Length: 397
Image (cartoon, rainbow, N blue to C red):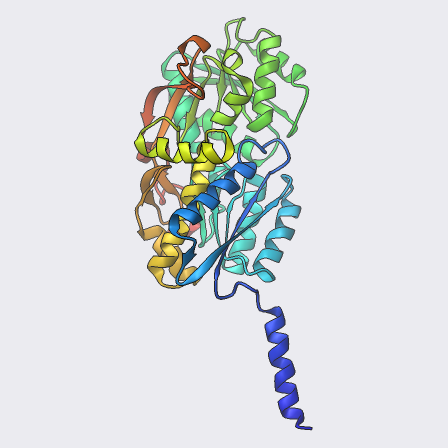
């Protein structure tokens, strides 16, 4: 027997065994909360939006089929890391997106840097993603805490809401949203009277709301999201917070939470979103197709996931390869103009685009299903987001 030939054959077989199955194709992973507090905020609906992007692109790129996988990280960074590591090392995933929950997104940022893989954060909010925690192949797509602060915080101070108390989710996202909004409030001439932090997925907000009431602040800023926001608004009504003269500000609230609450409970809330289904012809066309598949209108997370997925595929095509360095370069060069938004990507990976300040309609003002928002003002992208140089991202220095 020729032992040299046998050894070569065994080595070749071993190499094939550990080579990811999609090494020649393109594989995208949707990693988010699909069963917990953010399940409606992004969840399986974001997965559907990614499927739409792949279909709209034609289902393949560089002559290879585009594959899509998804998993529920349960809002646990260690769970997310375990899934993402397997995706990168074993299953040949090239890019991970959505990434609801800031603590998860920050953990994946570190892993993606280590593995030299692209991640495009959509559902997580902390501005650190393209700030001090930026990574060479990381992107942030739909919004961040700085943009939400500029939109909602700045507008409410200008309209007389010059004293604030924060009800804050007790993890990275909540801290960042409270910090960024507080700084905008103070820069606009307002004052922050205090804050209280609550656990993620809390069911009882009574003690927190009593502290907010006793502060006598004109605005109670809800630095939380998903079901936490919805539950705090419902319980605020029970405690008579708004009836007592205070205003609630949903600092990260989307169409999904408004729909869950209903207009009777949500009317009068001021919020900032980067997408609204009834904004223009392009947003309506996408929303109509999304509705036919899901029986619901998309929010900015779901529309943003569509945009992130489509933009990644366009960058792979333009680069002529799925090589991380080449695709990253194209993502930062190509302009974005789709159903979600129109704008540019900065050197730190921040997608800059306009956002919109909305007030939730009263039931009598709504003329058709999902007609929930009235536009107060447009927040220009260059004002909503800091420049790459100002972001704190060490890659830009």
